Image 1 (cartoon, rainbow over the protein chains, first blue to last red):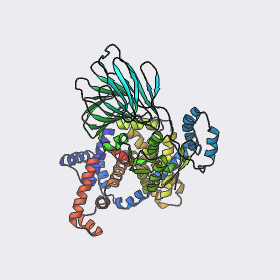
Image 2: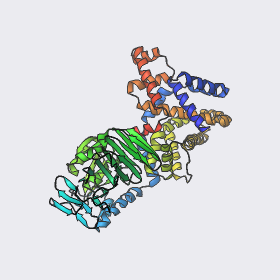
Image 3: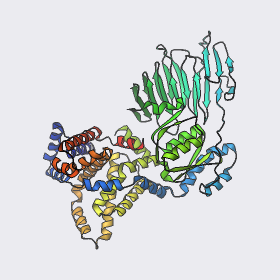
Image 4: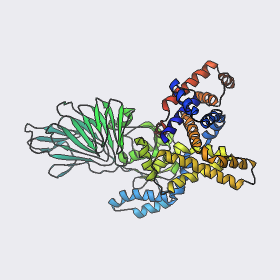
Length: 385
Length: 188
C-alpha cells in the first residue's frame, strides 16, 4: 500500500501541475475508475484554490527561528555550555591549563577581552618503519634516511620525498606514517612519483617503496592525490573501509571522522570507489559519497572540494558551523557559538588560506550578520550582529 | 526503502541535531500551513507544530520508515489542531463544523488526507525552487486560472504565461519525488 501511495502522490502532483504523459494519465484514470471515492477525492483536490493565498503564509514562516526554538526546548540553556565544554576538554586538558579561566570567560557571555590569534605550532611528524619519530617542521632541507632501497629527503619547498634506490627490497614492506596536525598541511612525493597533499589533522600510512602488484596507502582525514601513471600497478587509497582504485589520475578523498561518509571527488582521469556493499566508477567532475549503507554519486564543482591544496578556501552557501570545522583544522581556532541561529547562517566566497584568522573573520563579517571576537586560548566567540 | 531514507531515519532515531534540522527544512513550513488551514490561527499552529517536533525528539519509539514518520507528523498536527478546536468549541461555529465533518469521516479519509497533504507539501517545496516570475504563474495555474486570466492579472502576454508554465512543469517533472535533493539545495 505504501509504495502504491508514493506512486499516486507522484501522479496527482503531475496532474495538478499539468504535465502527465499519456501513460500516466491512463494510470491515474485507472486508479479513479477502481473506486468512486478515489475520483471524488481527486476532483476535490483539483479544485483547491488556495495555492496563491497560502503561498504568502508559507513564505512568511521562518524555519530557522523554529529550529532555534526547538533546540532550546530540547537541550535547554545548559546545552551551549555543555557543548562548548566538550570541545574545551579536548583542547585545554592536554595543555594542562586554563579550564577555570575558560569557565570564567564563559560566564561573562563572550564579553571577554579580545585576544590576539596565536597560530599553534604542533609538530608534523614522520614515523619511520623502525618506530623512530622525526619532527619535520622547522627542519632544514636534507636527508632524513637513506637505506639500500630508499632515500627519504626533506625539502623546504617540495616537502618530503621518497626515491626508490636500485635494490628494491622485495622481502618486506616497510611502512611510514606522515602525521599532519591541526593548523598545517604538507606535501609528500611517494617513491613511485605520485604526489599527495595532506590536509590538516590527517594521517597517511604508506610503504617506503611499493612492492608487488599494487600501490596501496591508508588515509585518515583528507588528502588530494596526483597519482603517477603505472597501468601495471594500480594505486589504491583505503579510507575507513572504502577503497579508491586508480590507474593514474587526480582526485580528493575526504574521510574526516566527524562525518559518517567518505567523500571522493575526481578532478582528472578515472577511479573506482568500492565501499562495503557497493561500488561506483567516477568520471571527472563526479563525486562519490560512500556511507556505511551505500554509495551516492553526484556532479559537483570540483574546485570547491580540492581548492584547499592550492591554498584557498572555497565556500558555497556553507553554514558557519561547517566553515568553523575547517577553521579549526587550518587555524586551530575553536568556535563558540553564542547564538544558535548563527550556526545555520551561510557564507559564499573564496578566502586565501594565507590570510590570518583575524582577516578571515573580517571577510565573513562583511557579508554575514555576525561578529567574531577572538579570546585567549585561540577561541573565537561568534555572536549575531 | 532507498538508502538515503534509511540513513536519514537512522540519524533521527539517534537524535542527531543535524537530522532534526533537515526534518524541519522538509516539513516545518508546510505543517504550519496545514494547521492554519484547520484552525485559522498562525501562532497557535506554529506552537502545535513545535510540540509535534519535540514529541518526535522525546519519543523512545524507533522509526522504521520514512512513510511512518511522515504519517505520524500529519496525524499529530491534525490531532493537535482538533484538540485546540475542542477547547475553543463554545466560541466558534466553525470549530463545531470542522469537528463534526471530520469525526464522521475519520475512518475513510485517513489515507486520502495523507496523500493530499503530501502532494501539497511537495508542490510548495518545488514552488520554492522556481524563479519568481515562473512561480507566480505556476501558483495561479494550480488555482485553476486560465492562461488569459493569468496574463491579465500580471500584465504579461499569454505566450509568456505558457512558457513560464512549461518551465515550471518541466521542473516539477524533473524533481518529483526527489525530496532529498531539495534538502541538499538548502543545506549546500
